[in-house]
Amino acid sequence: MKILIIDDETRARKGIINILKLSSMDVIIVGEADGVVAGIEAIIKHKPDLVLLDIDMPDGTGFDLLKGLDYIDFKVIFITAYEEYAVKAFEISAVDYILKPADPQKLLNAIIKAKEMVEKESVSLKLNALFANLDAVKSDSKKLVLKTAEKIFIISTHDIVRCESDMGYTQFFLVDGRNILMSKNLKDYEVILDGLGFFRIHQSHLINLKFIDYYDKTEGGSVIMKDGSMLPLARRKKESFLKLIEMM
Image (cartoon, rainbow, N blue to C red; front, side, top):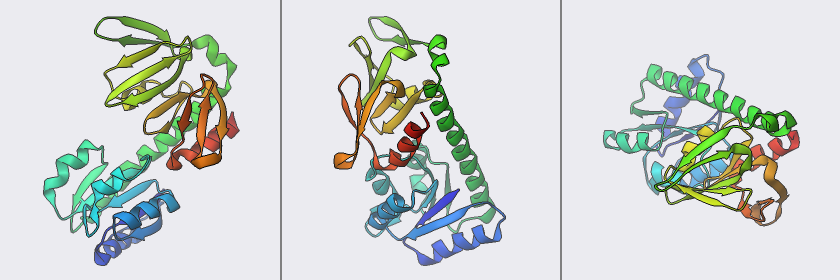
């Protein structure tokens, strides 16, 4: 597992590195950064699986850093001297929140938890590719019940072209041209559709892989679907997406 450390205090970064070096964990420290801007650049460059992130830094907060990214597909452990941010940290699904000075065992336990989560998601990604590549899946279509205030829709997962985040809601685009707006967020449906040939290419877009028309490499990369929609591909998802379509 690749780890990136972002903290404006050199002493704090070195302390974390020493804890990891003295442990027997199978991890790689891919880099360090001392602020928000440098941290974003390091994340894009190193593509870490886990970021050990400080909150208060000279050019902003750890939350500002996360907001500055197109997509977050790494785990976060906050290591900070300020306890009042804990609730906000867990609201964005942080693996853990550790107060400075970091307790070595608590830090290692949090990293073990993050490592298990990363490995589980890696297996999920491979299964998505497998399901998308097997014609046999077509004969085993799953049913999804979508309940709105006025109607209850029962749809086949193979009839979903894509899902789009819409201000905390999720818009379903179906193969017959219908759109269905649901009150759950996109993350909820990403979990429900996991393993059924869907892939989240961007913070706002979850697509059915069988409805991809082509990938446009220009202007940062776009995925064009068979319904004519042109969707952005997040920089952080590009490598995984290209590997995935090569496997199909």
